[in-house]
Length: 98
Image (tube, rainbow, N blue to C red; front, side, top):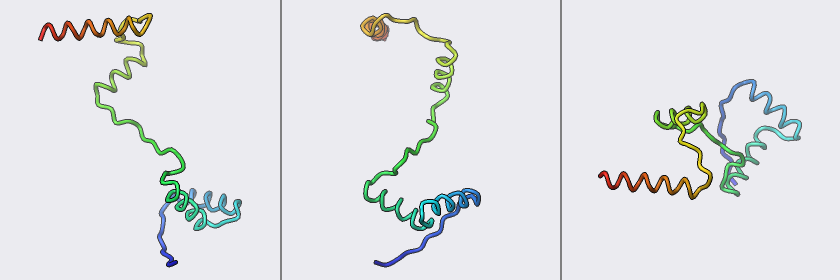
């Protein structure tokens, strides 16, 4: 099988830490990256979660801030049925006004 080379740029301190850990595992960084690549290809998934902060619009960000601050909240409901009935009534009223 033909071999291909590639280079990776990373923080020097991170590289040193990674290299030391690989040495503790009894392998070099090339072997570690190869194991990672084979696992990704075989499983067709990155083997750890990769997330980012959601990109909410200003209205949603304000609503989240309000909820976290306990502001601008509707009243509490004793059941789902009670909440649904109120929401349905609001929808019916909006359709009647339209």
